[in-house]
Image 1: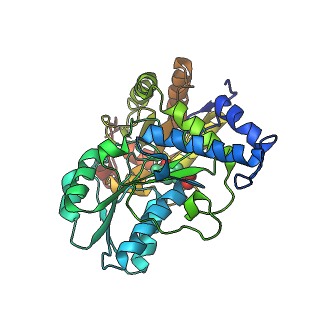
Image 2 (image 1 turned 45 degrees about the horizontal axis):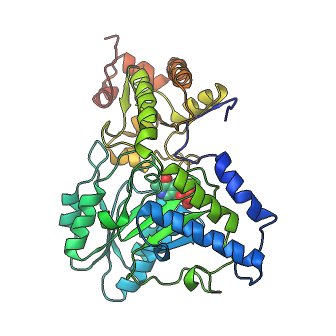
Image 3 (image 1 turned 60 degrees about the horizontal axis):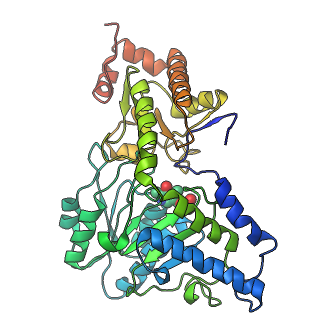
Length: 410
Ligand SMILES: *Cc1c(COP(=O)(O)O)cnc(C)c1O
């Protein structure tokens, strides 16, 4: 697909791929039967749902009956966490472990449960954006019901040590859920081999439409209903199925998870080119580690620049990017993820997230780099903070240790 703009915000959402669109379209029109109906149109729709379930299961290394289709990643996260809390809370297990850098779908669910009498441990990350399995191990208590830790972070792309964490949870008899929305299609996953008990994923981050997700729940873990109604999704999540989107998810996940390492190689090369091209700007920093990072993710802060202003200038140049997660833009609070890295507000506010896909070319990467360099220079000309930094003002000194060297006038 050739666009009049460069799309570098794939962690926020992705376009539906042509193959996925082709696969789903018939289910809007000539194949529009209700999967619960007994005539051929209905049976065909039911068959399409089950084929899609098999595709999702094949990619995750589980059985199809362990997959539930949901409306999105948020719903999957909510269902997983609340169902364990509901079930084990009754047995006195009212402690949950998570991290400070989860998506709001997890964080706000945990905060809700705190109001219901649960205790939640929010593990802090180190300055590179990681938690360790040892932190999880020390946080587990006799009354811990669930450990929920994201596979990869949506803002800074850091990949958590999921295998070790799952291993520890198993040893200690605690259920382990992971929000793998950003990991799917970027990291090969096998829930059985990795010991993952529950996993959330979303379609629109992997070229399926918005409004479709899935939850994997290991066989043997009782799953309370999300909704009450008919018999769909084995009666657990009733409501007439979103057949076109379910078909799309099956197609998209198969596409996303074929040759993951091959695709990642080129994306990573271009991503590194972008990082190298912009962290040479003085007063900048890369957020999140270079290693164990999603191949398409670059997150860089520029001192003396407002992230929102930078986004607007890039938009004028035809570049779609983000200054944190799309969910936090519109609020003036800096991203909770960047603050969790220990960044001062002044630096967290000047952050830019670039998330590229295979569609990006070398020319695009060069254009992204030069546009960012121009925009940062332009914004700093109008920035009182930058002027103070360059003039070596005392109160700005504490900021300097977070960013690359700046030529000051003093
Ligand atoms: C996008 C995202 C979600 C939410 O998925 P939706 O389908 O938009 O509800 C949850 N977790 C992470 C890590 C995400 O990136």
